[in-house]
Amino acid sequence: MTRDTGAARAVWLRRLAALALGALTVPAYAPLGWYPLALVSLAALAWLVLEAPDVRRAAALGYAFGLGLFTAGIGWIYIALHQFGGMPGWLAAPVTLVFAGYLALYPAAACAIARSLPASRRWWGLAAAWALTEWLRGWVFTGFPWLAVGYSQVPASPLAGLAPVLGVFGVSGATVLAAAALARVLARQQWRAGLATLALLAAAGLGLGRVAWTEIRTPALPVTLVQGNVAQDMKFREDTLLRTLSRYAETVENAGTRLVILPETALPLFLHEIPPEYLARLAAAAAARGGDAIVGVFDNAPPGSDRYYNAVMSLGSAPVQHYRKDHLVPFGEFIPFKRLLAPVINDWLHIPLSDQTPGGTDQTPLEVAGERVAMNICYEDVFGEEIIRQLPGATVLANVSNDAWYGRSWAAEQHLQISQTRALETGRWMLRATNTGVTAVIDPRGVVRAQLPQFSDEVLVAEVEGRAGATPYVRTGNWAVAGLAIAALAVAARPGRRKPRTVAH
Image (cartoon, rainbow, N blue to C red; front, side, top):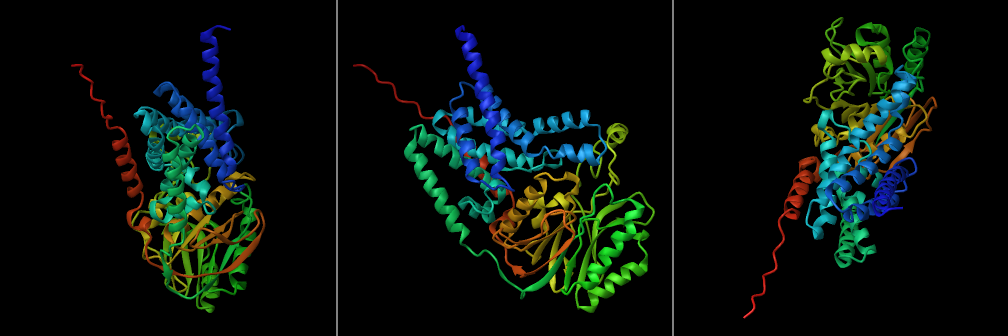
């Protein structure tokens, strides 16, 4: 073997190692929740990147890590495209891989930025670059911040205590900083700074995690969350519709709580198609208990127009109120570059009601059952900066979802962990009513207090407390962590001082 062949082999072995490290990071997230694993895998990646001979090879390592992480972590997109979206398997598989390849560009950029910095600052520059690129991934092309590193630390890691201050991207930056510090310690390079950083992060996370950022505003409220378990391939069939409507009506009537929440599009009809007497039946049942029901439905406004919304409406003691989903899923709920892509997409992807209208950013909490409920629908709760639009006015958060699209994958548990992070960031209880799971009640510390088993037709009854006040994250959103990351990178990029030359006399 020649020297050049051996060097090339070493390069590809490092890239394969980075790919494996990315895939091995997935168990750090829900449902397994082995959060220290993220620290270990990222420490190994940091060691590889910091030792990379140039920026290009560092970027390749970051890309390989991201490709492993996203291919293993969001492979469930294939299920949505193929099994329920009707896309042929031979096309759905490469589409899923291409999407993972796009997402991998962000860790590649973070590693490239870090490697471009002066050697002594690369390890903490990597953390700043990672937080910044995750933030960018959260809004570029409408955003997809799923599997942000910070989610892996919620709720058990000491670093989760940073979430109410800097949000999930701040937790991501802290996790990567801890990993890079660990790499420095194990390599016996800048190990004192590494140890100090680890100690400081642990102390900050544990200390901030003990702070009560919000306070109880209203007494405990019993709530009923409904999990209908309607199979995705049966949901829009006429022979299923009557059974679905009857089941949900009986559930609302039999509930013993002031607040009842049904899943996303529980009633798979346009609002103007639902018989008025059926809506009156739900409203009467909720009002009889002095409360309200929140019902998922498609809202066609005005009736018969081509403008329709994924929405919820309240029925009961309070006046009827609506919330319409604003952040839509590309290709699933709207078609980007519609004139260009619609003919192609419609030939290969058959998702019902895939040309929806966004509901607007100025919507307010639903005032029901004595609480102000900040609604969000489906994957809207992935975007923390959008959830806080209704805060601090809202006393409770609520998410209605239908993760039946992803079958028996890890998607629903990952989504639950995301909701846990939103509760922790805002200091609010989070109520999750889903079609097939995970239906759950989450406390302001991000801890799941009660949940239903997936793929079961059940109801969850629990108590929540309305809360008032604002965490630092509610006040600043993601601008604080983005600003800190940019400032840190600006400092890290400054040229180092040159040693004065010795002049012989």
